[in-house]
Image (cartoon, rainbow, N blue to C red):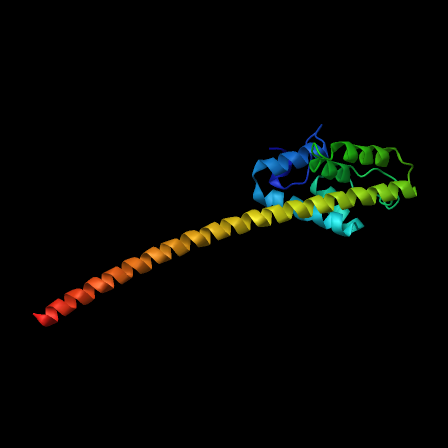
Length: 176
């Protein structure tokens, strides 16, 4: 794992944000994964300077000046986030959006619209992945409940059988 996994917010030399994000999500370190997920979701939903600044700080990237934060520069964190959700089905379309975003003029309406499209893509994919995770959790919970119900039914049947045996023994004792 890289220096970042300890939470110190620095990218190792030569490492891209995209590589670091992949490494974090495959590391198994739930604390860092949850922290990054929270920052990504907040940044994508709110899109304000504070949430972007927090995300940049997480990766140890320099803070953007006010002129950079309004369409002057390409957002590498956004592009990395988009690429995390790129698959065989959407690869051509997504790469077209990225290429158009990267080549659009600074401060242009086109760049702004493409950036909004990329943010919406990441947000929708994040929500989809979150729903998949919640569904998997619900299935695990359902299986656990089913298992516990079966166990409780077995315990109840055993208890009823023991009660019946005790009643039979008591009746035999009383009759003798």
